[in-house]
Length: 181
Image 1 (cartoon, helix red, strand yellow):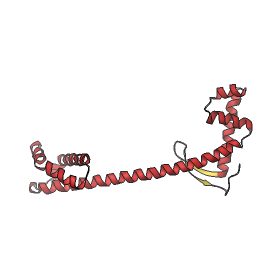
Image 2 (cartoon, helix red, strand yellow):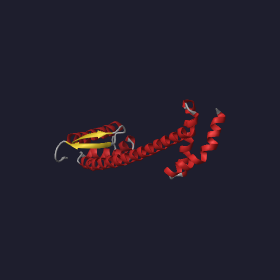
Image 3 (tube, rainbow, N blue to C red):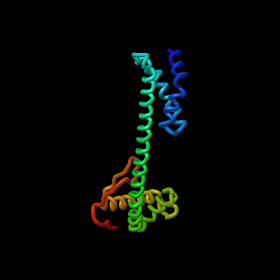
Image 4 (cartoon, rainbow, N blue to C red):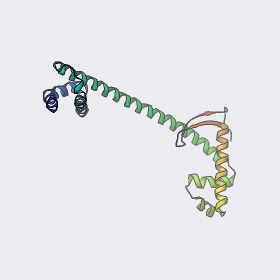
């Protein structure tokens, strides 16, 4: 069987590569397809019933491999385009919601607003916030949590949010015509 494969390789390699190159303009991709064809020949040589039709069988396998490659490539390109559109849509929804969140943060009572801004926007730890505001650690943690809950309530009263597994807003629908503070 190895001798048969070596013979097929020697007799068909150059012609098959030329055949593939006419359809696929990228040399590296053509060589990858050719390798795929020979892998298929190796795995399916036992299914060839009439050895006089070997040449036709090899070319049919090559055509099918080219078609599979083109379909896969087009699918990957479409998948990439869809992902780009989804990312852009998600980013727009997230940006719009971020604007609302700022409005709701500004509307918080001073003690909650200050704690939330220091924690969420300035990146301070709860301990650092407690020291800066001159309050206990427990009180700082409580203010942050209550501030977040107030913001969340305002947002969920205003809109229905769809989020991805990471918590990023991917879409939203307003419950009312105008969201109020």
